[in-house]
Image (cartoon, rainbow, N blue to C red; front, top):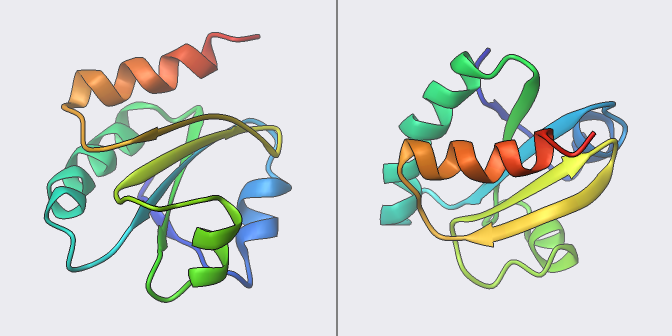
Length: 108
């Protein structure tokens, strides 16, 4: 399951209308930590099939960045059943990302 690029037009359908957990990576192509995080997030998308992984280019989707208060990148927001439940800033190692996700997935 690859990380899907979403934009302002399909964010509602892909994230807010999704039942379950969605991990959203707010990034920019020029951002070094974003480029470091991307392959880690991609690996996790393969290892965690119960979580949907998407990414939003903040340069191309400034309205979404503004709506969700993205001031630093990378910023990651985890949604559950369309509701924002967790937000954090900055790259993590693989286990750090997994811990952030599992803190939400475990909330049943």
